[in-house]
Length: 168
Image (cartoon, rainbow, N blue to C red; front, side):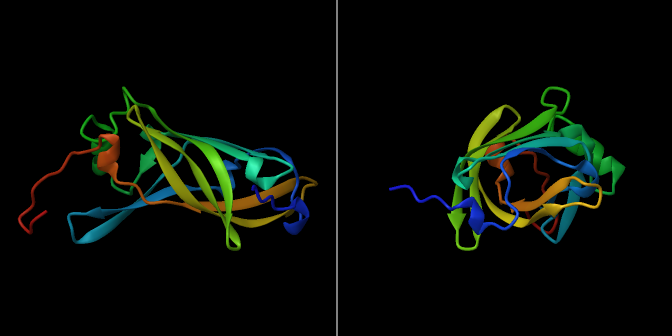
């Protein structure tokens, strides 16, 4: 039996095709660095389309990220991340996500899909939260979302490591 959440249960919900607003959006990450700290970074070039359907579960998301647009606040590190040791952006310029299912989970949602990085595609699940929907100050209509997941970079062929004195 399939359970469908009525769109009326989501105040302001509208069906249609939505494009990401890059000036109000961010695709970021956090990774462990040298076993003692965490490095945060983001990608500055990306695109995304969200298609909202009459039944929320029939909606879909497609995201494309320009891997060369990585920024961690350290240009030397960013250059290394673009190299074949990590993303190999000359051969693999984009990372993509294509949803395969949208499912309710409590007050929020789970977004299942296929993540492709370095030519390797693996299923991932994102915790997906609707932040709000409504008119903007310019006569348009906006929707806000956030999504998070955890991946193992080695699953996608990003395996470079350097031994350090402290171990790891």
